[in-house]
Image (cartoon, rainbow over all chains, first blue to last red; front, side):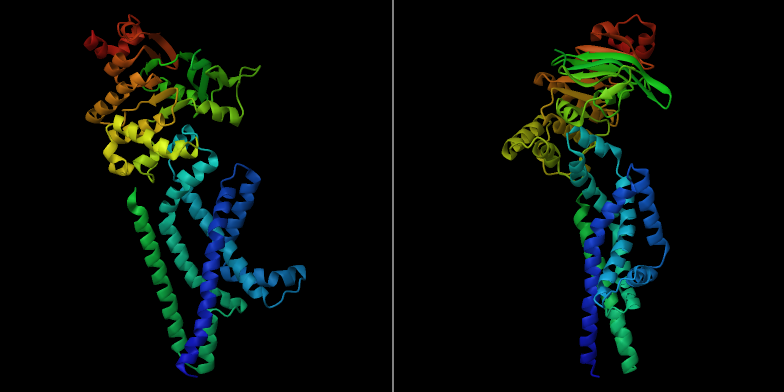
Length: 216
Length: 255
């Protein structure tokens, strides 16, 4: 097989990896905020449920969670799932896992905000929702950006875990090509892909941090 | 009609009563200073008046409208959130540590609440904000961020921010305690200049000379009660032992 054909196949895997990455962020970042609210809720039952959820998501391997989401419907509920469920299972698995991590990051940021910001907002007549979205959240985002960057970089590499349930992402493709072609080139290409992807992420996050450095 | 009425207020923190049965009235345009040793309950009283703390017992009334009253067991109940929201529009508070919004420019700190809360016209709000900044001597700082300002400048922005909402009564919670003497002077000067706006002011302060000069009435608090209350002349020349021991040197200096 020509190298160019190999690279074309890898590009297909790359597209799937990027899709997993983007969709996971698009859904888990807002969901994480909702989960963080549940984790800080005044309702003790809700708080306990969310705490348990976060504990399970952080305490078990993502690989295992993906398998449970993928095989669960069949083994546990007897539902027949088609092969298109693979990518759905991947997305569900990644989103609920990453939402748990993001929730804890949001919580750390929200709880580090000085109470004076809330008091000033209350005195100026802001509603609770206005206070959160205008005053608190923008400052929280600045505070948590370094932790979020860490998590996003981990996500780039974690997308390769979709391999375990047979989704044709970058790593799956590279592994298949490596064994069929008896070549290291696909692995090298995959390594470069992950590295460059993360470099781009790091630079983008660094730019964002700089953009937010106009205040302390 | 009094702008503010607090009747028989009590407040405890974890079993320790920090305010015992205090009543306080503030009339239109009146300037009231609250002085007294640290831990005497001055700030707590102000935080109860501004509803940052809930009272255990007592009434809170703004312009005849009840924000809080006693149930039949003598425990305070507060009005519904709509009522409280409306009542909150009557007053503003200047904090000890400013509490400006660090991610907003100076101008936005002042303009944001009138725009998002009061839904006022943007051109009008901008004009008001610039006028207030001029009054504070900070018109060249409109586009600066709070972290670029000195403490005294930040506190003046905080005063402008509170004034932009057109309160009838403005509370100051030790507005100069976080400032060095030089910056204290510039903030006190600004507060004095507000006297001709005819906004009522309630000022918790440790600046005795300032309290004496600016106030219509001085309240001396100690151990959660009002020990003495009267014109500055009366209080600063008081023969009350507790007042005298607190004023100590100030009393001598001011005679």
